[in-house]
Length: 237
Image (spheres, helix red, strand yellow):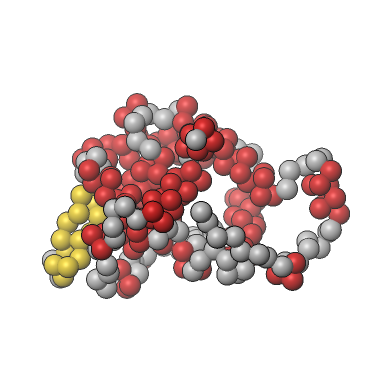
């Protein structure tokens, strides 16, 4: 069971054009949150039906991690980087990464400067999966953004970032650092570095009991949000 936090009206401000609420409540148009979820589902369905054969048996959650690691192949990535990128807790990332290691999708390699640190790397199997998924995702993005100018896309991402920030600022959904900005960052990507906090030894996955109910529920909840297939499975339970 999850705790329910009561939210007061004082925490929110109505949009400048309050008539939009009337439009949404009348059913003439979907409110932003519903529209975003609808688009999310459409994207998931498209990626599911066009998924390459090499990735057919890989879960959407594992796909996200593989793609992230592939994009940062020249950097040292640690579990806490996964936590920050996907907005999950350490216990959740431990569970996900542990399962991926069992499947032969990732490996953990010691860091020369500190034997206590182990970076996460892709295996040959997951590198091939990442390559075919990258091509499919690029094609999907081109279709998704067809007819839009660069400035329109930048503005859209800015709006999404403002919406996310508004919810995070309520203080009800955890540490702000778990929710990276959605703004388009166009500085030289080659200058990006792994955050210094990643160099500090943290608790290992072994510190978390495998039967921890909260971690299990949180992991399932995260996967449900990013996988329409999992959402259907949840409704059947």
